[in-house]
Image 1 (cartoon, rainbow, N blue to C red):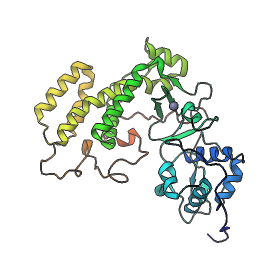
Image 2: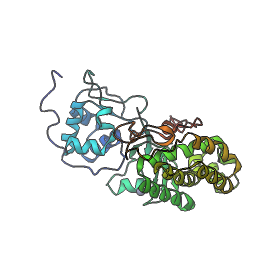
Image 3: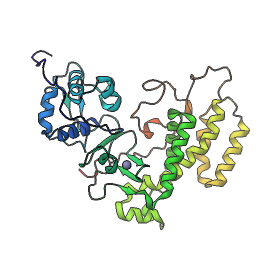
Image 4: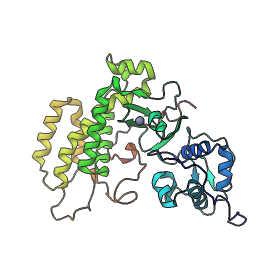
Length: 340
Ligand SMILES: [Zn+2]
């Protein structure tokens, strides 16, 4: 763009910053400024030109132009490639258009993904005391290292849910990690999406405040909306794990109609008869693969094209509701701006 100072942001800032996995660009920029004891507005002015709005990374994501990304990489002391790898919203698909007059933007809502508070103990390991924020495909995050569940509530009074009181949630995340390792991230995520849709259809713990057990107590403490995904998480990963049995056979071209029926009977006994209808619908959306189909091609769960999104899998910030092909979808972002 004409008139830009070619020397702007050429020199790296004195102090570098360790990345947090999944961090939002807005959070990183705020932390980088604080680490170098500068107002964030001054750092933004070194990136280029843009609206001088209050910087509130807890509410939305910051997006930059190609020029702004280069300047930010220089200031950070790393390459554009490394920065784009670490900060997902700096990837090409999220850059401001070349015709835009601004080098950064804070839209009202993140264009993809959810702003979730980072585990403060993980942030502290990277010398950050103020809240840091992640941009994730789910409106929650489980830190297995510190046993904490964080979400998109932005609550500073109770910023996390202590999983020492909910060991089943830790086991659920470990189960999900094993599933991702076994099937690959994309296939596991599609299964997770369909499992969530099934839970929505049967209304599983839709209102945990009515429950008399640990979930009722949790809902009383943090509110029904924050408690719901925590309460459902164990069942979500168990169901996805069971669905994987069928999915693996389907992918290998070994799935018969009898397999589907006997699987349904087993699952019905294990859970509840209410699961039968949505799971039968899920199975009917699965066409057995042909043995001759080359590996890596074909359709994913429920006929989804495995090549959808970037590369061979779902877009990195696609939510579960975007990914399921079943019709029952609860909007997990209904509380996205609950505390605004
Ligand atoms: Zn942590």
